[in-house]
Amino acid sequence: MSDKPITLMPEDIQRIMGKDAQRNNILAARMVSEMVKTTLGPKGMDKMLVSPMNEIIVTNDGVTILDEMQIEHPAAKMMVNIAKTQDSEVGDGTTSVVMIAGKLLENAEVLLDKKIHPTVIVKGYRIAAEKCKEILDEVALRISDGDEEVLKQVAMTAMTGKSAESSKEKFAEIIVKAVKQIQDNGKVDLTNIKIEKSKGEGISDTELISGIVLDKEKVSLDMPNSIPNAKIVLIDFPLELKNPDIETKISISNPEQLQGFLNQEERWIKEMIGKVKETGANVVFCQKGIDDFAQYLLSKSGIYACRRVARSDMEKLAKATGGKIVSQINELSSLELGSAELVEEVKHGNDSFTYIRDCKNPKAVTILIHGGTEHVIDEIERAFRDGLGVVSSSLKTKLIVPGGGAIEIELARRLRIFGQSLSGREQLAVEQFASALEFIPTTLAENAGMDPIDILTELKSRHESGEKNAGLNLFTNKIENVLDARIIEPYKIKTQAISSATEVANMILRIDDVIASSGNKPGRKIHPEMNEEF
Image 1 (tube, rainbow, N blue to C red):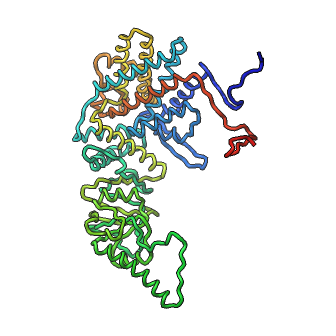
Image 2: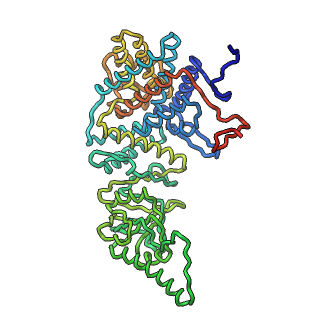
Image 3: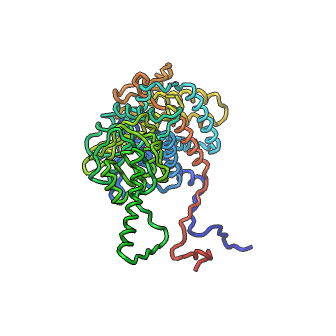
C-alpha cells in the first residue's frame, strides 16, 4: 500500500475544523457586536467612517456602520445581513439585533467550554426564542389608528440619539402626518414618501409638503415662476422630434425643399404643444426631453414645464396630483390632468427645486430636510427613515411594547422561570438566552455613564416585585415606568430582532468546518472556453 498522502483539495484551499472553526466564527461575530454597542441608545456615541475617496459619514445607525465598513469575514457578514433584514423589515433596532446575536454566541461559548454539544445549545435557543414570542404576545399593548400621540412617541423613541433631539417633536409630527396621509385601506407603502434634501437653513426648518418636491428647475427662464391652481399634465413621451433608430439620409435638391422640411418639423412640434394646450394644462412634467422650439412655445403660452423627470418621481406625481401618466400624444385629454394649489420654482442656495404644493388628498408626499452640512442632513435622513419604519410597522401590527430595556428584563425574568420547567441540558441554554437579553439594558446604562451592575440589579428587583414596565429613562438617568415616560417601541422590532439573532447564532454554532478558497494560484491562468490551464 502506498505511503503517499492523499490530497483532496488544491493547495490554495484553507481549512479550519472543529473547535477552531467554531471559536473563530464566534470571535468574528462578537467583534461585530462590540463594534456597534457603543452606539446604542440616546446617549450612544457616533462613528466616523472615511472611504478611500475621502467621503465622510458620521452616524450611529447600526446598519449604515456595518454596511460601509466592508466586512470580509464570512461569519461577520451574516451579522451584517441580519442588520440589513431588520432595517428593511422594521427600520430600527439594527444595533440591538447584532448585539443580541453577538451575546448569544458569547454565552454559547461558556456552554461549549462545559462540553455541552452545539445542537443542544441550538435546541435550547430555539425553545427560548419561541417562548419569547409567546411572552411578547402576552405583554404587548394594543393601539388603534387614531392613537396619534402614541405613534409620535414611538417615532421620537426611534429618533433619539440620531442628531434629531432638538426637533424630535416636530419630526415625529411630520412622520405621523406623512404616514397617515399615504395610508391606503390600512396599508402603508413608504416608497410613497419622498425624502428630498436641501443644504442651507437649520434642521428645524425641515417641512412636510402635501405634494412632491423635484430637484428640477423650469426649462426656460421665460416661464412663470409660480402657477396657482395648477392643472398638471404628466407625459412620458418627448416633446421633440424623434430621431430615427437606423441611419437615415434625406436628399434635398433645392432651398425650397429644405425650408419645407424645416417648416414641417415646426408644424409637428406646434401640433404637439397645441394638443397640450387644448387639455387646459398650465404645468407640464415630461419624463423625456423638450425641444428648444417647444420650450419657446410653452413659455409663450405661460405654461410651466420640467423635463427628464425620473420615472419614480412621475409615479409619485401621479399619486399626489391625481393625474395619469400619458404615453401617446393622441391620448392627451383634460381627463388625464392632475391638480395642485400651487406649482413654483424655489431656489435654495445654488440649487433649484420645483414644489408641487397643497394637493387634495395626496397619496404621495415629500419630506424636505434642511441642514447646515451634508453629514448632518444625511444623519437626519437616517433618523427619518427609522421613524417612518417604526410608525408604519406599529400601524401594521397595532402592537407596542415598553422601551428603555424594560421588555428585555421582563422577557429574561419570565424565561428563567420557564427554564426551570425544562429537565434537559436545554435549560442551561435558555438561561444563557435570558442573560443575552439583559445585555441591552446594561449597555444602555453603560453608554449613559451609569453603573451597569447597579442598574441591572435594581431593574431585576423592580420586575420581580411586579413592575413589568420599569425601565431606563436616560433623559433623567432614573429607573421609572417607561410607559409613563413615553418611551415606547413597536412590537415588531423585538420579535424581528429576537428571531433574526437566534437564527444567525444557531447557524454559526452549527458550523464546525470552514473551507475557504483563495482563488487561482498566482501565475496560473484558466482558458475561458477550454476550462484548462495554459
